[in-house]
Image (cartoon, rainbow, N blue to C red; front, side, top):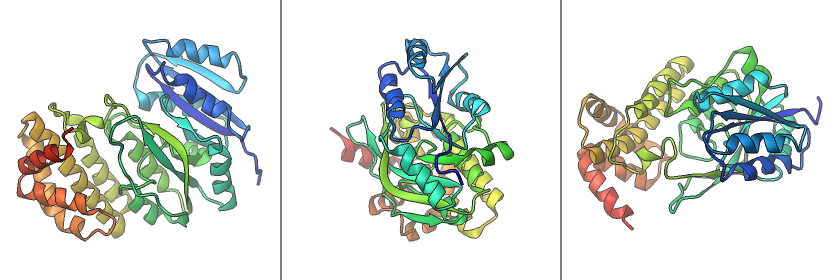
Length: 327
């Protein structure tokens, strides 16, 4: 086994001129040098495209690509079509790597003969970044990994804290799906895990995740006063995964994930004054699965209290949430 395989890093880019150079330099300054960096400018309207070309002129490992705006899923897929690496990683244009990300993630793959490696991350950029449980280092099977994927922890459904085997992706034509706008990452990882037997989880914090208030899915967690129907794609994803794996433990994890997300989306529905068909559907999900959520040892007390209040009254939960999070 080649201990220094080529790693492809794919960066989808759209209007991130303020952060892009930091992102790119975090890859160029890696302690592991065997990589190609594919920068996909997805029709940026700011100077991001210029920065891509300027940086590419300074380092032959950078592959600059430009396309009309099609969204993050399409930009990542464009990168996959051009990838030459043995392994592939994804990095968003406003995030950055620890200097040893590639070296340590490659070691996790090679030493454990694994098909996927995952690291812990640090969330920055907001007043109250999410507090997720950092998992202990372990090698797990796909069933356990799927349970973690549906949880609230340092594994989670993100793609940017993971290293993938490109051959698995290409052999099974795994791609990002834009018709799941609230959970494109989770769909990708879930589809990928189906073909894995060994997944290496590390507890090293190797990725910095910048959260911005205007982020794609931040609205449902911030209880904005506008309800976005795209958030319902989360529940289509869990139904799909439960059917794909046809496994009791995975199905239970999907139900628990649905309950957690239903409570969060109901909060935003209340803030927006929306009480239509989706609202009724989520209340049904909440009531049918609450007992599983209460029994889940990996769900925190505050989350269980939130679900309990939502079962009584989503409006009551929303009012209490506002009181707890007021400045």
